[in-house]
Image (cartoon, rainbow, N blue to C red):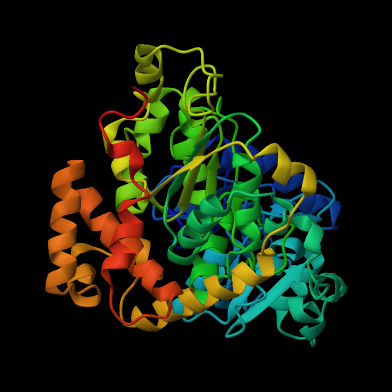
Length: 511
């Protein structure tokens, strides 16, 4: 794997006079250790290890190889090179799999990118462990074989028997997952907006964020409903398009998190790491060539919820600048550089001051300087990249006791889906899906402003002292508000509402 794309590795086996087993081709420790496991598995299923010199080459020789997926092709290469079984179909498939000592196969990561590689390079299909093959069931233009052991892989490569029963779509495991996957998602799997009492203003902001894929920050006192609203957001997001599902599923496949999943991901990911998570966990990283995606990539096309945002180490919060702006993350090491997609919605939540009660009457005991120091953890560059800033106030006691419910998530989700559909139609010729992803080029094309809007925006920018980045983000949010109202063009009312969601940009906040 290089990022979320697979590259082919050819396993060559030569048996000649001499002694020893030699593995060459820049293999890491995991691949070298697999030799003993592979030899034991070959013998366990009734084949012999030739008492000669065995040279195994992993080509291209200048690329580092890692992982346990080379077990199966190495075993098949030794069996074929020693002449114990004729395998005429060996060059027609991409083969991967980790062997157990008894010859059974265990899942490996990267099934979806590898199936995609096989299709692009003209292979007939892939042979991989059954649970790994289950990830790639949506790649229906090639044959995807899911095998349980070494004998089943040999059946396919001998080309003598009918092996249609080993196609993943004909297996019992597929039928089991397919039937369970058709079960409707329970409504209780996410919080409903109707369960959150009050907070109509914050709910409106979250609806706009969901409709346009915008970043948002919720600031309020403890118990005001910040976390509940972030969790309810998952219930109003529309399903992923096929293009979005492919990208997100490839990330999870590369990260080794897809072996228990059937096909492409349907629901948008919702990632909520603890504020004590490390830099590598959030951004991605690893040792040597084993670089895995972090939370910013695992939240691709979904939500990254960071609670207690003010408690996150500043080095980590500042590291979010690049992914939030570029919608990708570059992880560099001495010998490698990997780029992972990172197009996600950031939903952050924090208190307005150290005691947590600023803005709630006389409850706050903090001095203006303490509040300023606390909010200074949210640097200007980070706030510039957050489109919607919401102050979540405590719910009045009367409203809380009476328990007056508002709109359900289903009603809000219907409006969000209509707005997203308008954006998909608008960006059909562009490589983006939501308003939040628009560049300056897209703003000029899709967000024309009349003279009245330009005059209003000029006054807003000069009065609030906003940056050029904040200026463009106000226009993006206004475009989303217009989409929710099914308006063709941005109106002054849309700009006014969008500018109202940037209260943290005012220099006197917290004084």
